[in-house]
Structure formats: structure tokens, C-alpha cells
Length: 300
Image (cartoon, rainbow, N blue to C red):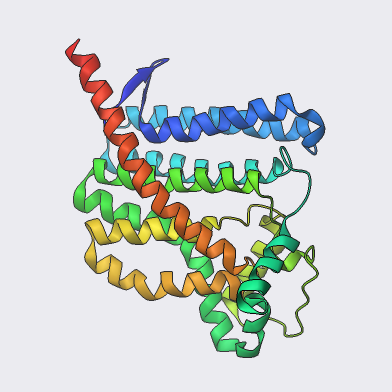
């Protein structure tokens, strides 16, 4: 993937996707002040993220050691992805003022005759809960682990392509979340109730901390977890088949765990997987156009 120099920085397509999203979010927060809760804090955080991303990438470009260059670049992108999600939560009602949870619940009831998130209660056991929520939590670690494997086995370009596709999938999910705000089944907005508690051990406790301290209502549809995990699994298939087979039970369980753990509706899962496939197709076209334009510019 070629680079272009803008304001002294060598920018890649991943940077355009992430920084462009930040800039759009800043403009939306400025344009619709009444739709953003605690707007000064939100704007300050988004501007900080832009500066942080640019500074860390500048340091990565100047790093002489291979590991330092890898670490700074990968960390910048992966932290940037997190803050894209976080910013989208702050802007969740920028276009639409209501929640669509009742519509999702009604749709799933019409299709399945019930609610899959509630159905799964009858299969709840401590060991199954711990496995499911291990998969849900371990997904966060797959980002850097797969980056390390791809970078040190196949080089910087392969890792950059992986980071680009994950970034694009996350950005597409946030666009969907702003168009169709869904709070998630554990928020009580759709009237769902759960009679069986999720009991487990270490990873169950971590997931509950994530639910109470990190997650806020919104960003459920499409599922970023499922979209990004699908991109990771696809990238492993392309570049590291052994990693693909190791990830298979984790990714497949993760799809279920998002519903089992009451973070998502079943519709969110299918939408997230669909977004991943959209990112694969669109990303290929964007990379091709980006590289061709750079070659033409150099030839001229």
C-alpha cells in the first residue's frame, strides 16, 4: 500500500479512513450541538485523538528499530479504532433521536417466534458462560497478536493491509450505528428481562467490567465485535493458516457469545458479519484506486 505526504506526514489509506472519520465526527459535533451530550468534553477528546494519532505515527515513521516502528504504528491504529467507536457512542443520536431496540426485538420475534437472547438463558451454565465470555474478551487481544504474526512473518505491508481492513470495517459499523441507533439487549430499552444471571469466573468478571465501565448504550448494530473478528479470521486465512485454525473455535464462539452475553441481538451479529464482507469488497477497490492514483502521480 503506497504512501502520500501530507503536511510532512507519510499517510497511508488506513490513516485517511481513521483521521477522516475523526474529522467528520468533529464537524458533526460542531454542526449539531444540541444532539451531543457534554459536547465540550467530546470535542476535546476527539481533537486529542487526532493529535495523538498524528504524533504517534510521526514517531513510527522516524523509528529506526523494526520493533519500535511496528509497535508505534500498530498501537496508533488500534487505539485509533477504539476511539472511533468511543466517539460514535457520543454521537449516537446525532441523526436519529430514538432507539430502534423495539423494532429489532419485533423483527426477531416475527422471524424466530421469540427472542434469541432470552432463549439462550436455558443453556446458561458457569463453564459455558466462562468460555463464551473468554471469547468475547480475548477478541481484544487478537488485534495485536495477529498483527505481530503478520508483521514478523510477512512484513510491514501485510500488517498494514490487515490494519486497514479492520479499520474500514469498524468505521462502516459506526456509520450503521449512527443511522440505526440500537442500545443493546441488556439496557432494558426494548423491555427484555433476564431471569438467569451470568455466573462464571475470571473472564465473566472482566466482561461485566466492560459492560459497566466501558460500554454505553449504542453502537450495537452492526456488531463491531463480529465485523472485526470476521476480518481477523479472513486475514488469518489469507496469511497464516495455522492462526486461522486456532482462531476458528474462538471466532465461531464469539459470534454466539455476543448474544449469549447479552451485549447484542442476533440481528447485530448477522449485520456485523455482512459489514465485514462489505469491507472486504470495498477495501479491495479502495486499495486498488489508492495505489493506481499514486503511481499515476509519480509518473506525471
